[in-house]
Image (cartoon, rainbow, N blue to C red):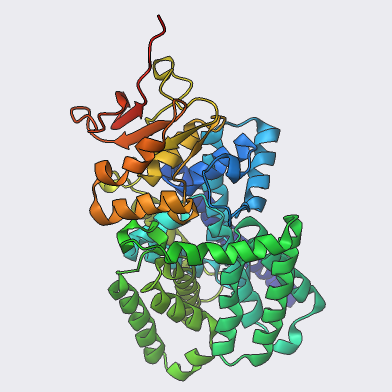
Length: 495
């Protein structure tokens, strides 16, 4: 009789547990795919590096044949990512726009899903993402950029989870091998291998001496392995470090730096989130002193503080760490108040999914649809014949968006760009022009050396309204696209 009573109950409980778990994971999987698809449905395309990554993969050319670069820099900073995109292009024959959309979806899913395997309550991570994307709207924009930096963010979260959730003596040979491999992949694909030292540094601040030492060893070996795969390991390692020093050493106002290298000025919301977490810990009776032993806390705090000097420390390190920290706090509260595999977890997952999809994914104030409207110089348009640079020519411009959009539309273009994705990569004489422009805000005066240097193969592109022709009398001008003027040296008609 006892067995007959228990058998159906056990089966029902077993089915209920699996039903709840399947519902939670189904909601999470659905929203992580649906959110980028919803954003893309507005016509969204990232407006910066994802465009040039796709074009670079299709072009098959080194950066030295695409940009007029200073001789100290010869490497491809994101060589692994370009290999991946080139392989995808070869296998699918996708054009540049489809490659960008693939990048947006793939990188978002990898980054947004990175903490899920490590949490006992995966709905806590989804709710953490939803809350932070509402509090920091730019967080949603950051994780939908389709750039390889998102892989580094995912690897950072993975390593924090792997090493903070186990005792030092539990680190097996497999753990070391996986860690080294993850560091190598991050170095090869993203290129910023030197920033990965922040991970062992966070464990060092948390006084996890052994883990910090082991992670430092894995970081060194992994970075060297990733560099070795490029074929020019020493050049890759040294020039990767040189690039940020060149960028931050330019003599220009902060607003002339690329966006992620400018100082971060949104510290108050982050401080409020940190304060709310501390209050929650206090209310639940957990000593605040234990936070000093948490590497996730130290990376969140360090990323926030360093962000006031360079924003990318906050965007790429502080924010992901806070997301993981907040998820752990939510998980603790859920474990206190709600049994595991209860239908309350499904409700939490559904709430987080609604916030993500309908709030973070909304197009309020043209948040997403304002991007993707690319109308630029295009060698495939008959009306632009004669106005694109000729083979071997140079396209001069004073705006980074000109490079992103024009290269994206013309990956096979047989010319180079004087200004690319990072001004500090310009030759010294061209960087002087850019710095003068940043200080004077006078393109006519600052760009005179470029106009004097132009040949018949070169073009000068300026952005401006159709009624305002650029005041460069030495050039012929044509309004070729929305807000786009192209200038060239006058042609002499043959008799």
